[in-house]
Amino acid sequence: MIHLNIKKALKKDFHHFLDFERKKIKAQLTLSEKLNIRLQEALHDLKDQKDYDHIAQVVAKRLDDLCFRVYICNEDGFQQSGNAVKVEGTWEYHPEDKSKNWSWRPYFLENIIRMNYEGRGFLS
Image (cartoon, rainbow, N blue to C red):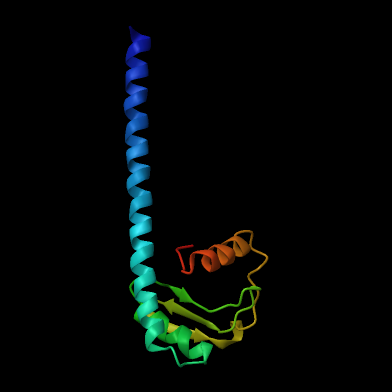
């Protein structure tokens, strides 16, 4: 009888865990979609802009409620802009970060390929 009660409790706990994880993944996908839409809107307004430093700063301000750092890099991982960084609620710009490379991070190449394949950005 005790074994049956433990099994029943464990099954209930698994269900709660899976339900929580499903809701979390759905919330992440929803947020990612909203972020992508807002980013596309900001980039649309900047479609003729070629200055990556300017683009990063404008995107940072337009996505102020969602971002703490914005930078633009190429598919080889080299930053094409400096870092727009939110410090105590105010955006600062760090041009000295331009040309830093992110390709050494294990997820970088997968993220770039995935963005190119899907034609969109995502949360990382």
